[in-house]
Length: 132
Image (cartoon, rainbow, N blue to C red; front, side):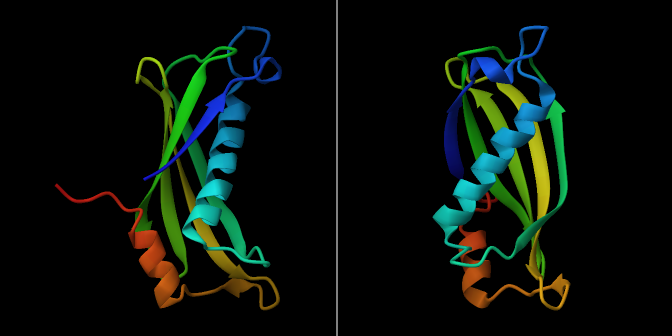
C-alpha cells in the first residue's frame, strides 16, 4: 500500500470552516501522481488518463489536520487499473473519506488504450491487498 501525508492548508477550507469537497480530489490526485512515480509506471512520457473518479465524504476535516492518503490497486485490466484511496485522520485513525478511480494507459497518437507490459502489471500487483 502506498501512503502519503497531507496537512490541510487554510486555503483548502470553505465558509463553513471545513475542507471543501473538491480538495479531496486534489489530495487523491497528488497521491496518485506519487504512486505512479513510486511504482515506476511513468518515465519521460505521461501516458495515463483518468477515466473515472469518485469520493465518499464520511467526516468533516478542518484546517491543520493531518491526513494519511492510503492507495492500493483493487483491480488490474488489460490497459487499466482501479485505485482505491482511503483518507484517514492521522491522530485518530478515523477514515474521513474513501475514493476510487479508474486509470487507463493511453496511446495519444493512436487515441486508444495501450496494454500494460508484463513488468507494469507486476509492479501494480505488488500494490494489491493480500487476500485473507
